[in-house]
Structure formats: C-alpha cells, structure tokens
Length: 263
Ligand code: PEP
Image (cartoon, rainbow, N blue to C red; front, side):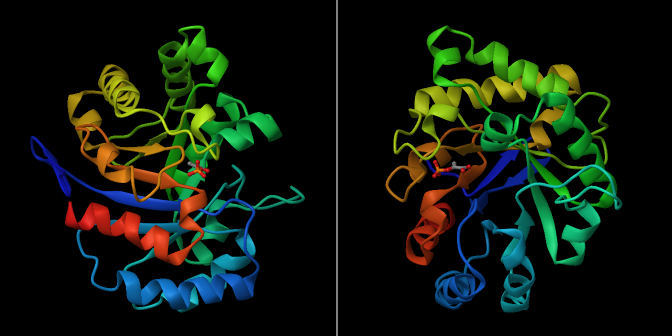
C-alpha cells in the first residue's frame, strides 16, 4: 500500500518530494517552469513540495511561488554567516531569498568539489543554527557497493556528518542517494532502497534515540521518475524523493508529486 503520510508511533512523516535542479536553467527558463508548474500542483495538500534551483533563480522563484505551498531551497550553503569567502553563500542569505531548506553533502559536491564529512558537518550545523532545514545526502559509489561496503560507508557518512549535532529540537531530512544511480537512468531496486533506508533509520536510533529516528524523514534519490516513484514510496522507511533530471520538466515533476498525493 502506498502511504501518503507515514505514521510511526506519535510521529507523522509528511511525504517530501524535492527537486534538485543542479546547474540548470536561466532566470527566464525558471519563470517559464513556474508558470507551467503552479497550476499542475495547486491542489496538492498532502505532499510537501520543494524545488532547489540555482542561486540566481531563487529570488524570482520565490516571487512566483508567493501564495502557493511550494517551497524553495538552496543546493548548498557555507558555514560562516558572512565575510571574505569568495563565491560562497551563507544560510542567512538563502533564508533572505525565501529558502526554507538546503541540500548539504550532495555526492556531486563530495566527488567533484571534494567535500568531506567534516565540511558537511560544519555546513549542517550552520544551516540549522540559521533556521534552515538541511537535507543531508549520503550514498555509496558503485565500487563501494561492489566491495560490499555500502552500509559501512553510509554509516560513516551519517556518524561523521552528524557529529555534535543535537536533533532534539531541529528536524533533519536524510537523502539516500546511491552515487551510481544519480543521473544514470539506473535506479536502485526497491530492495536496495528498503535495506539502506531501514539501516539509516536504525543507525539514527543508535546515534540519537528511537523517537528522533522515527521523526526523521528519509528520502530516496537516484533516477526517480514517474514510473518508479510509487515503488519507492511504498517502502516503509522511504518518506519521499530527491529528484534531479525529472524535476526539470514541469509535467514530469508534477506527475511524480501526484503519485505521492494520490498514493
Ligand atoms: C540528484 O541530483 O540528487 C538526483 C537524484 O539526480 P537524478 O534524479 O537525475 O538521478
């Protein structure tokens, strides 16, 4: 059965469908998307909808989404609030542009820019302190999976990225994104997603406690499309999706969201 709102004990975990646009779309393309997208999702009430565009599109997007329930987020944020950090953007600046979420530790940043768990940890702390909801991305490479190291790698990413972070008051979203499934068209199987999201929740319970683990939303990401989203959302520990390529087209992203809404 596809659950729209996951209910575990006293905790409700609202399904979150988040779009990660990566380095795509100019401002006029963003505006075109928003005009097409809004009417397609205006009746969505159960699913939380989020789009993380490029920084230059944040402000125009928040203007166009005013009055709607669609939220916007950044794809990264630095750990310092301001200063001589050429090219960086602070959590407060994202809030100023209308963001409520920020993606931290996406595998493209880990692999291409070289972000470590230590950096990810500093960024999560800063985002939380500023009042942004971080989406912490974790996931193994193909080689790590083939070497039977997937669980160990994800465990280490979680433990080190969350070091000294109190989740008692501040909610966290974790996105499980196997690197080999991102942008490849090869999605993880539901079995793989079930095993890893269940493992993530158990590890959160070990790091914190059962209540915090039960309240934390865990997303699956990696080649999510309208024809596989239902399989992922049907998994007990999958509370939504982080969607790359398929979030760039208003129609396909709206159909993924509707699958969560109507499930
Ligand atoms: C992503 O970038 O987080 C992602 C999951 O991309 P895609 O859906 O294109 O695989």
